Image (cartoon, one colour):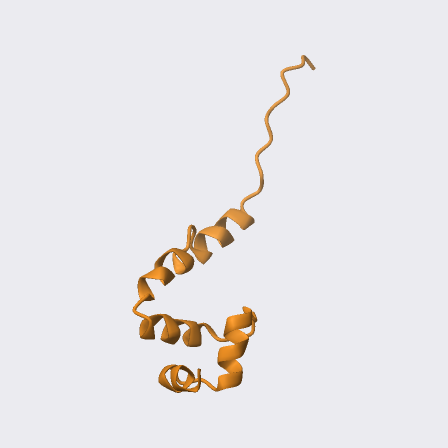
Length: 73
């Protein structure tokens, strides 16, 4: 465990936190671990955004459209 932690550049405590799935571990540590395990391609699906931040902001700024009523006035 100490050897793998040294190889990816983290402390043994950080590696134990990674094993527990602690969400405070920096993404760079996960990337280093996946690189060391030759599994870096596993990040592709996780990091691929479905929408850009700009698209999300534009959509949030647009007022929602309402359908006109078909009832006679």
